[in-house]
Length: 168
Length: 290
Image (cartoon, rainbow over all chains, first blue to last red; front, side):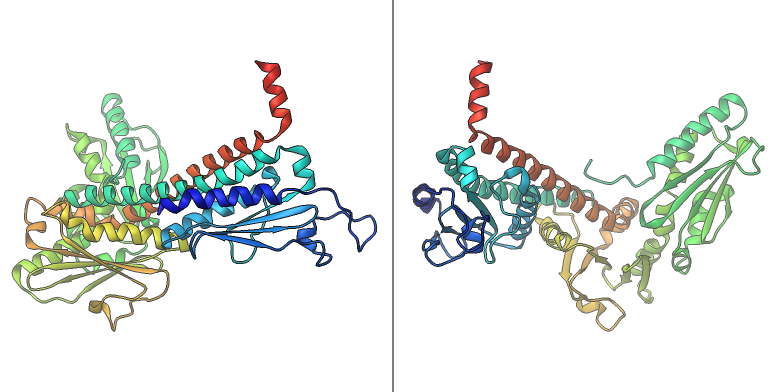
């Protein structure tokens, strides 16, 4: 399974680096407006073709790009019920702190677990390559954390059951 | 701390201290304390009649005592507490006159702290005896919490105890399922352990046709106790463990959730640190600092 991880992350990394060429762009439709075009989509010429990089059905990344912003949506692997609630809890905690994270979106794009919105303001403040590093590291560590927690819950369950039952 | 303590630690400590100081000083200190236990039961330790300093009373309020009484709880309490038992009912009162406190008052304090456990014990002992003697009696149903009950039944070669529990949150159902799965497979760890079965959403076949609830948030856990689990040497231990099972399960589910939450919050602040590395000011600060 991890044999596909490295090429998957490499593909995501190069796609992100390529698509993160964004610059300031005032709205064409409304005077004095300057909004992320990927969110409000004022015309077909403003958006680029969305790109999906899928490792398998359950894990994929959607990159939607436009003149002044890109939206990266990640679908995190959830193999069973326990992983589902762990991933839900985790993404809820992250999205509640979206303001601190600057690039995070408060609601995920439908069909995905979590979404990032990177605008030209962010790329003016932060290094682009470090932003890409962050997203890749995020993807790796979330998977690791979820499987660690799943193991921890299973281990705790086993110990509790053993402690209880050995006293009979 | 993995296993829950059977006796109420608060009651035990309070009583031990009061007995000790009472014996040393010749009279009890004035006290009026409420100590809470599981399942909505409250202990009340107080000096009766205000100024009377040579008596202490310990009252336990159990909302569902009338269900336990049906199965002989009163007799069991009389047996354990003898002269100290003052009144029985929804409010059980133990009275401790200073003159009657024995040399080994710690044992008395321990027995008093097990008051709630002894109320439950009567039910289990009745069914253990019924199985041993082969008599047929109706299944016992105790609704000890809102929406949750325990069913005890004596069969020809075993006693089954079925807990029906409600999971108040959706996450509890999943984590609870993991725990119950481990309990079910617990036999491979310990050969003497009783068989544990569980079913979610639907009551097990034995309870079909009763008022047993079904629903998304309901779980049923069945313990199959064989005669060696309630032989003379093991009976008390078995009752100790079984009657707090529901509390044990939910306590550990909550512990797991708290652990998951704290780990996720730590991970979140780690991510924040990584993201802040992307900002140039951070680099500038580093240069000045080094």
